[in-house]
Image 1 (cartoon, rainbow, N blue to C red):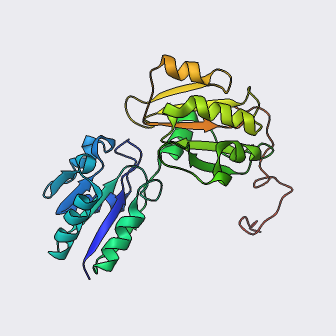
Image 2 (cartoon, rainbow, N blue to C red):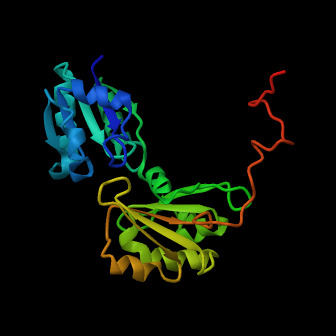
Length: 253
């Protein structure tokens, strides 16, 4: 059966690509990539294949490009920034390809919120602070279910992460406060995490909107609301506590 690879190439730093993804790109006949979101050094890995920028294509054009080349036994890659499973719109493509007898293989990649956490030098979960991460997007042209409104998610006081939403930051702040976050809750906005021009803006729900506006950041940024940011009030993990035993750490005698 003919197949297509949906490949995540990481958040930006060309060294943050998996070995599997790199090998596939190097062997590819056709690479359909996500516009300026893909770093040029990664595109240069495709030495023998054709590159097609999906930024100027509609859904049907992308599908035809993938399908026709896969049917001709070409090694076809749909190249996504970060990880294809997060806001990657791959499900509709996979289902349509399956109906036409084309198999799909998904190759995961490092996603931007993980690169953002690395840039901040923090954990997204901390004992005594939160053990939960919520990844979402603010409502705009793409609607969200009522149960997933920001004010509802904010009730959990978890680490709240937003994709594709920095241009709606003012509304995010209002909804987060309405849901129960204190105005003093730390916020970090990471612009183009792991790229050479990466920028980090830190603040609180009370002042982050002005700080981000002053930096003129309106896209390509992750927003993180959480008390884990620069936290000094947390508990030590029990995992390596001398008084805590578990099945993953066996003491040799």
